[in-house]
Length: 104
Image (cartoon, rainbow, N blue to C red; front, side, top):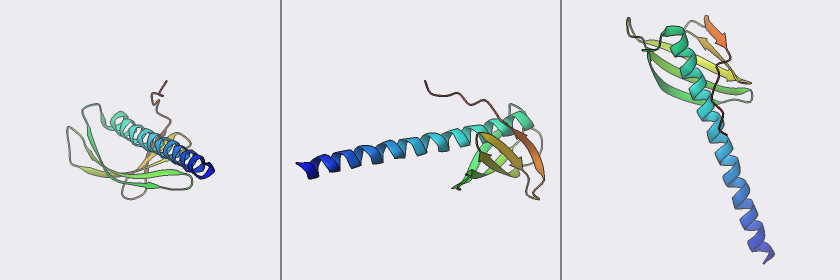
């Protein structure tokens, strides 16, 4: 009986931890896409290429397709709720804390 209870508790904790990670990854993607659209315009399409977790936050690679102009590869770092966009040369395009809707 103790073994069954410990397995149930471990399963519950594991599932809770996985859902928390998924929420923060989703918030990082949302923050980066919002930052790119704010910088390039509302009619800009943003496609995520790569997402990496770091100790400080998340690092994303994005393809940004503005309505006018060519595709740009952009890197986005999210640390403590702050999204920072850089271009392929490492020049900072913007650093802001976009408002991401929180789940109630």
